[in-house]
Image (cartoon, rainbow, N blue to C red; front, top):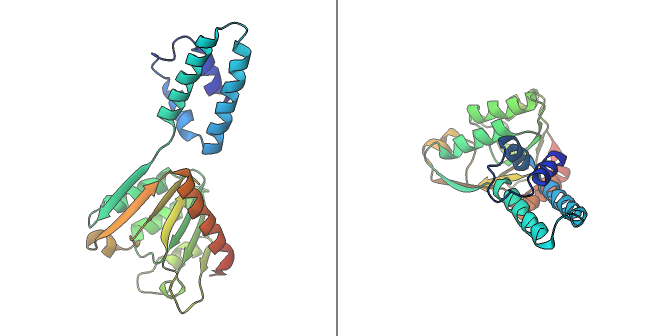
Length: 221
């Protein structure tokens, strides 16, 4: 955040017209919501110091331009996808490949080998991976759960006559994916399915909280 604040301060007079440095754009894009809040607070504190050398109108303009830049380059991801077709699977694969810190999956069944391999790759990249799935689907034909558990990924299951039928995930605590899509070849190639992917904080938090609740409630595989 210090480098972002320094950049905004050094370009006090020309933020409205500046072509923002690519490195600064990447740093803003990586900020979590709490980081953006802290950055805004630091900008307000900086504005107070600027009162000694700048006019109030200049400071207000600088604040507006600074916040516009943060809003423009902050991470936003809100899309809906449909199958049959490869759009849903391609999106999930990309999100897994781009994961930096954590992958929490609460999925009814996983039989798609390519998706399972990418989850294992995340684990091997030292991404924190956790999986919740249905107990009856663990040993179903084509299930990839045992492979992932043997790779060292923590897995939890329900013990119920009913299904753990959720199909959602949280990537890096900032993207939630959810919909009818099961992680199967049939869902990709033949079924009418949907997937919503969103970085909307309030929605991501609710899915995160539900995952944590289920993680405590479910049983070790």
